[in-house]
Length: 132
Ligand code: HEC
Image (cartoon, rainbow, N blue to C red; front, side):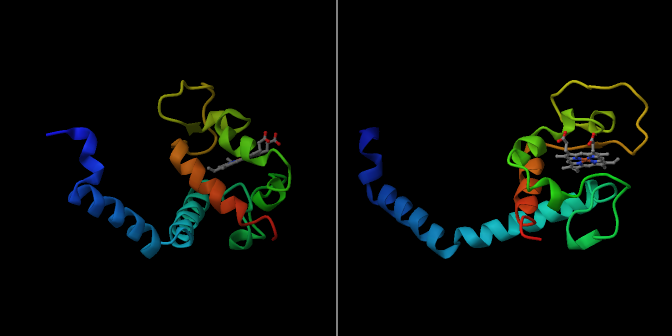
């Protein structure tokens, strides 16, 4: 059998048709909403004790810790979020699997672990705070 002709076989055609159909039935907006929801849950769970993260805890957060809605106004906020775990004060209490421990200081805050995928979700959520 000639493998290079796979996509022109009935199954190949069915599959590419199915893919196109799946994209139509499941529009990006829906997937995006779910990701934003997940990002919000993560931010609520991991960041909201120190950061104000929008309406959820507008009067919360700790002292002069910058709020998410304030941070997203800077032009390089995505970069800052992407690397927040290496920026003070986070290295003391945040771990990213596969990255060395940055600080051996005793965490003054319960340590947590976060993956780059989860950070992306938080960024999607933070992006929704731009106008708040
Ligand atoms: C224990 C408190 C605490 C927690 C929890 C915390 N942060 Fe922060 N974060 C801070 C403080 C304090 C600053 C301000 C540091 C400064 O200005 O020197 C900060 C700053 C930042 C900055 C800006 C850093 C820079 O250098 O520009 C980002 C981005 C950030 N936090 C993201 C997050 C995210 C995302 C989470 C949750 C996954 C989180 N933080 C959890 C205390 C915290």
